[in-house]
Amino acid sequence: MPIVFITGAARRLGRLLAVEFARRGWDVVVHYRSHADEAQAVVQEIARQGRRAVAVRAELSQPLQVRAAFEEALQLGVPDVLVNNAGVFPPRTPLESLTAELWQQTLESNLSASLYTSQVFAQVQQGSGRIINIASVGALESWRGRLPYNVSKAALLQLTRNLALELAPRIAVNAVCPGILQLEPGETLPVPVERIPARRYGGAQDVFDAVYFFATATPYITGQCLLVDGGYHLR
Image (tube, rainbow, N blue to C red; front, side, top):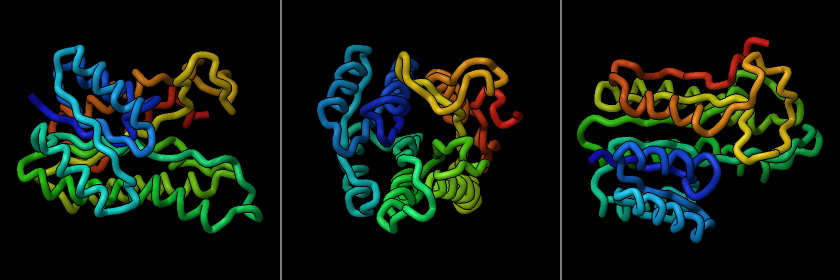
Protein backbone atom coordinates (compact mmCIF):
# COMPACT_ATOMS: atom_id res chain seq x y z
CA MET A 1 0.00 0.00 0.00
CA PRO A 2 1.24 3.55 -0.69
CA ILE A 3 2.45 5.68 2.19
CA VAL A 4 2.05 9.44 2.63
CA PHE A 5 3.99 11.61 5.09
CA ILE A 6 1.97 14.71 6.06
CA THR A 7 3.46 17.51 8.14
CA GLY A 8 1.19 19.34 10.55
CA ALA A 9 -1.33 16.50 10.37
CA ALA A 10 -2.73 16.63 13.90
CA ARG A 11 -5.26 19.41 13.37
CA ARG A 12 -7.36 21.37 10.90
CA LEU A 13 -6.39 20.94 7.24
CA GLY A 14 -3.61 18.44 7.91
CA ARG A 15 -5.93 16.19 9.88
CA LEU A 16 -8.47 16.02 7.08
CA LEU A 17 -5.76 15.32 4.53
CA ALA A 18 -4.52 12.41 6.65
CA VAL A 19 -7.99 10.93 7.12
CA GLU A 20 -8.92 11.31 3.45
CA PHE A 21 -5.73 9.62 2.27
CA ALA A 22 -6.51 6.72 4.62
CA ARG A 23 -10.02 6.43 3.22
CA ARG A 24 -8.46 5.91 -0.18
CA GLY A 25 -6.29 3.06 1.06
CA TRP A 26 -3.10 4.88 2.04
CA ASP A 27 -1.00 4.40 5.15
CA VAL A 28 -0.18 7.71 6.83
CA VAL A 29 2.69 9.27 8.76
CA VAL A 30 1.06 11.87 11.01
CA HIS A 31 3.61 14.55 11.86
CA TYR A 32 3.00 16.95 14.73
CA ARG A 33 5.01 19.44 16.75
CA SER A 34 3.07 20.07 19.96
CA HIS A 35 -0.40 18.48 19.68
CA ALA A 36 0.44 14.91 20.68
CA ASP A 37 -3.06 13.96 21.84
CA GLU A 38 -4.64 15.20 18.62
CA ALA A 39 -2.03 13.34 16.56
CA GLN A 40 -2.76 10.09 18.38
CA ALA A 41 -6.48 10.64 17.80
CA VAL A 42 -5.80 10.90 14.06
CA VAL A 43 -3.76 7.69 14.18
CA GLN A 44 -6.63 5.92 15.94
CA GLU A 45 -9.17 7.22 13.42
CA ILE A 46 -7.03 5.92 10.58
CA ALA A 47 -6.65 2.55 12.31
CA ARG A 48 -10.44 2.26 12.53
CA GLN A 49 -10.47 2.48 8.75
CA GLY A 50 -8.15 -0.51 8.56
CA ARG A 51 -5.08 1.47 7.53
CA ARG A 52 -1.74 1.82 9.31
CA ALA A 53 -0.55 5.11 10.78
CA VAL A 54 2.18 6.40 13.03
CA ALA A 55 2.56 9.76 14.77
CA VAL A 56 6.01 11.36 14.69
CA ARG A 57 7.08 14.51 16.47
CA ALA A 58 9.57 17.05 15.11
CA GLU A 59 10.38 20.73 15.16
CA LEU A 60 10.72 21.09 11.40
CA SER A 61 13.09 24.04 11.61
CA GLN A 62 15.66 21.64 13.10
CA PRO A 63 17.17 19.36 10.41
CA LEU A 64 18.27 16.71 12.90
CA GLN A 65 14.73 16.39 14.24
CA VAL A 66 13.40 16.12 10.70
CA ARG A 67 15.77 13.26 9.96
CA ALA A 68 14.82 11.50 13.19
CA ALA A 69 11.13 11.80 12.32
CA PHE A 70 11.70 10.17 8.93
CA GLU A 71 13.72 7.38 10.53
CA GLU A 72 10.83 6.72 12.91
CA ALA A 73 8.37 6.81 10.02
CA LEU A 74 10.26 4.05 8.23
CA GLN A 75 8.54 1.54 10.51
CA LEU A 76 5.65 1.87 8.05
CA GLY A 77 7.96 1.77 5.05
CA VAL A 78 9.44 4.36 2.72
CA PRO A 79 6.95 7.18 2.06
CA ASP A 80 5.81 7.54 -1.53
CA VAL A 81 4.44 11.06 -1.10
CA LEU A 82 5.43 13.99 1.11
CA VAL A 83 2.83 16.68 1.81
CA ASN A 84 4.39 19.80 3.31
CA ASN A 85 1.32 21.16 5.05
CA ALA A 86 2.72 22.59 8.29
CA GLY A 87 2.95 26.35 8.42
CA VAL A 88 1.90 29.50 10.24
CA PHE A 89 -0.36 32.47 9.50
CA PRO A 90 0.97 35.17 11.83
CA PRO A 91 -1.20 38.06 13.00
CA ARG A 92 -1.45 41.17 10.87
CA THR A 93 1.61 43.28 11.71
CA PRO A 94 2.51 46.72 10.30
CA LEU A 95 6.01 47.00 8.89
CA GLU A 96 7.12 49.36 11.65
CA SER A 97 6.11 46.76 14.25
CA LEU A 98 7.60 43.72 12.51
CA THR A 99 10.23 42.03 14.67
CA ALA A 100 13.17 39.96 13.53
CA GLU A 101 11.80 37.09 15.61
CA LEU A 102 8.41 37.06 13.83
CA TRP A 103 10.12 37.32 10.45
CA GLN A 104 12.48 34.44 11.18
CA GLN A 105 9.80 32.22 12.71
CA THR A 106 7.53 32.68 9.70
CA LEU A 107 10.28 31.88 7.21
CA GLU A 108 11.38 28.85 9.22
CA SER A 109 7.85 27.45 9.40
CA ASN A 110 6.63 28.30 5.90
CA LEU A 111 9.83 27.85 3.90
CA SER A 112 12.82 26.25 5.62
CA ALA A 113 10.78 23.37 7.04
CA SER A 114 9.71 22.30 3.54
CA LEU A 115 13.30 22.39 2.35
CA TYR A 116 14.51 20.19 5.20
CA THR A 117 11.71 17.63 4.84
CA SER A 118 12.16 17.51 1.07
CA GLN A 119 15.90 16.92 1.44
CA VAL A 120 15.40 13.91 3.68
CA PHE A 121 12.48 12.58 1.63
CA ALA A 122 14.63 12.64 -1.49
CA GLN A 123 17.34 10.72 0.33
CA VAL A 124 15.11 7.95 1.70
CA GLN A 125 12.94 7.65 -1.42
CA GLN A 126 15.26 5.88 -3.83
CA GLY A 127 12.54 5.26 -6.38
CA SER A 128 9.95 7.63 -7.76
CA GLY A 129 7.95 9.90 -5.48
CA ARG A 130 5.91 13.06 -5.12
CA ILE A 131 6.33 16.20 -3.03
CA ILE A 132 3.33 18.50 -2.62
CA ASN A 133 3.79 21.87 -0.93
CA ILE A 134 0.78 23.67 0.55
CA ALA A 135 1.35 27.29 -0.41
CA SER A 136 -1.36 29.97 -0.64
CA VAL A 137 -3.02 32.41 -2.99
CA GLY A 138 -1.13 34.86 -0.78
CA ALA A 139 2.03 33.73 -2.56
CA LEU A 140 0.78 35.63 -5.60
CA GLU A 141 -0.54 38.73 -3.84
CA SER A 142 0.54 41.50 -1.47
CA TRP A 143 -1.62 41.94 1.63
CA ARG A 144 -1.15 44.90 3.94
CA GLY A 145 0.34 43.82 7.25
CA ARG A 146 1.09 40.30 5.99
CA LEU A 147 4.63 40.81 4.70
CA PRO A 148 6.24 37.73 6.33
CA TYR A 149 3.41 35.47 5.19
CA ASN A 150 3.29 36.73 1.60
CA VAL A 151 7.05 36.56 1.20
CA SER A 152 7.38 33.11 2.79
CA LYS A 153 4.65 31.60 0.61
CA ALA A 154 6.02 33.24 -2.54
CA ALA A 155 9.42 31.79 -1.68
CA LEU A 156 7.78 28.39 -1.19
CA LEU A 157 6.58 28.52 -4.79
CA GLN A 158 10.10 29.24 -5.96
CA LEU A 159 11.36 26.39 -3.78
CA THR A 160 8.78 24.16 -5.48
CA ARG A 161 10.13 25.05 -8.91
CA ASN A 162 13.76 24.61 -7.89
CA LEU A 163 13.08 21.26 -6.22
CA ALA A 164 11.19 20.11 -9.31
CA LEU A 165 14.29 20.84 -11.37
CA GLU A 166 16.77 19.38 -8.89
CA LEU A 167 14.82 16.16 -8.28
CA ALA A 168 13.67 15.40 -11.83
CA PRO A 169 13.08 12.89 -13.26
CA ARG A 170 12.78 10.82 -10.10
CA ILE A 171 10.50 12.98 -7.94
CA ALA A 172 7.73 15.30 -9.10
CA VAL A 173 7.28 18.45 -7.01
CA ASN A 174 4.18 20.63 -7.13
CA ALA A 175 2.30 23.15 -4.99
CA VAL A 176 -1.33 23.68 -4.07
CA CYS A 177 -2.34 27.29 -3.43
CA PRO A 178 -5.56 27.47 -1.39
CA GLY A 179 -7.61 30.63 -1.24
CA ILE A 180 -9.81 31.66 1.69
CA LEU A 181 -10.63 28.50 3.64
CA GLN A 182 -13.34 27.96 6.22
CA LEU A 183 -12.15 24.94 8.17
CA GLU A 184 -14.46 25.30 11.18
CA PRO A 185 -18.23 25.96 11.18
CA GLY A 186 -18.93 29.64 11.76
CA GLU A 187 -15.26 30.56 11.51
CA THR A 188 -14.83 34.32 11.01
CA LEU A 189 -12.81 35.14 7.91
CA PRO A 190 -11.24 38.43 6.77
CA VAL A 191 -12.69 38.36 3.24
CA PRO A 192 -16.43 38.70 2.49
CA VAL A 193 -17.73 35.72 0.57
CA GLU A 194 -19.08 38.14 -2.06
CA ARG A 195 -15.50 38.79 -3.18
CA ILE A 196 -15.09 35.16 -4.22
CA PRO A 197 -16.51 34.41 -7.69
CA ALA A 198 -17.57 30.92 -6.56
CA ARG A 199 -19.66 32.61 -3.84
CA ARG A 200 -18.43 30.30 -1.12
CA TYR A 201 -15.36 29.79 1.00
CA GLY A 202 -13.08 26.89 0.29
CA GLY A 203 -13.09 23.79 2.44
CA ALA A 204 -10.55 21.16 3.34
CA GLN A 205 -12.07 18.74 0.83
CA ASP A 206 -11.37 21.21 -1.99
CA VAL A 207 -7.71 21.27 -1.01
CA PHE A 208 -7.54 17.50 -0.63
CA ASP A 209 -8.85 16.99 -4.16
CA ALA A 210 -5.97 19.06 -5.52
CA VAL A 211 -3.40 17.36 -3.29
CA TYR A 212 -4.64 13.91 -4.27
CA PHE A 213 -4.48 14.86 -7.93
CA PHE A 214 -0.78 15.66 -7.63
CA ALA A 215 -0.19 12.56 -5.47
CA THR A 216 -1.57 10.25 -8.14
CA ALA A 217 -1.11 12.10 -11.44
CA THR A 218 1.61 11.46 -13.98
CA PRO A 219 5.06 12.60 -12.77
CA TYR A 220 5.33 14.46 -16.07
CA ILE A 221 3.43 17.21 -14.23
CA THR A 222 6.05 18.94 -12.08
CA GLY A 223 6.97 22.44 -10.94
CA GLN A 224 3.34 23.57 -11.02
CA CYS A 225 1.10 25.59 -8.70
CA LEU A 226 -2.61 24.75 -8.66
CA LEU A 227 -4.86 27.52 -7.33
CA VAL A 228 -7.80 26.28 -5.26
CA ASP A 229 -9.50 29.59 -4.54
CA GLY A 230 -12.91 29.69 -6.20
CA GLY A 231 -11.62 32.33 -8.60
CA TYR A 232 -10.47 34.70 -5.83
CA HIS A 233 -7.35 35.58 -7.84
CA LEU A 234 -9.54 36.82 -10.71
CA ARG A 235 -11.22 39.63 -8.81
